[in-house]
Amino acid sequence: MIHLVEQEKRVNLIEAVSLYKKSMLSDKKSSNTIVSYSATLNGFIKYCSQRKDVDAKNIEENNFRVIIHEYLISLIEYEDTIQKKAVEYKASSLNNKRSCFRSFIKKLYTLDKISNDFSSTIEILNAEKGQQKRILSRDEVKRVGELLNSDIETAEKQQKYLKVRNKYMIWFFLLTGVRVSELTKVLKDDVNKERGEIFIRKSKGKKSRTIDMLQELKLMLYEYEGHIKKTKEAGYDIESPYLFSKYREPMKPMNPKTAYIIITDIMERAGINKKKDQNVQNNISPHNLRHTYASYGIDKSVNPAYLARQLGHSSPDVLYKVYTHEIDQKQREVEREKLEEAYHDVISY
Image (cartoon, helix red, strand yellow):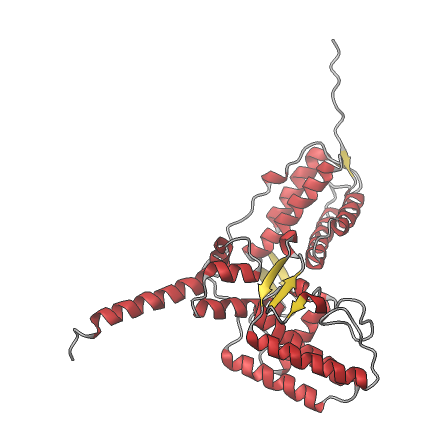
């Protein structure tokens, strides 16, 4: 009897990466994920091209698996061009790269480009715990608010609309805790001021949700509508279905990268972010505004299940995992106050 042995598949890494990038678009992955995963795979291609024992266009499947693991092992530190020194990778950064390869491998297996799905052999690292998230203090929030108002007062003609849009966009971040990829998709029709609700279109996890609107945000959005009306009356065509649109192409949503640039620029001008040639570890980005919303809620003992629903977490457990430090600190304060109250009437000095 003759046994037929299946010939081992060979991987053209260049074509495989190109195919995977297209699949990310068709799978509707977030723009942030596409950019991040593409950069990771481009780095892997560069790594393979620098190895004399690897032909990136013709890799045996078994060797392909080994090379991926060797690449992940090599990721210990990277060169920080701003600080001009080698910086050790954080577990969260490494996990992002590992998640990329797990997804990449699964897709290649689904498309019959490899014979075995070995994605499970790539372990996810235990993330650092107990690290406090960088948030805006109340004084910093006031400083940002004053700068935003000043920007509007000093702006001329069409620039005034941009300053108005930027002001209410930042307050929307702070008062909802949405992700930047979610904010750019919000339509005007998604905002129901009568019910005090905002429909947030699917982003991470591909799940849409409806969140409650704070009274302060409702009043601000009425103000925002008034500014837009005045801008239209002045003859500027800014008609858009989006709550925060591009200026020159108002029928298209704002690019999340644009929102990132706007916010980091404002934080730098407010004296909160340090300039690019300095240490930027504690700089504020859109995600830090999300952390600010969550931390303020935790500080006021908002029900974790409610806060998790507002933020779009799958369960309160995710909230506890992400904000371990803040929750532990708040709980310690509460318990300490209980003990102080217990001894208040019995201690004499």
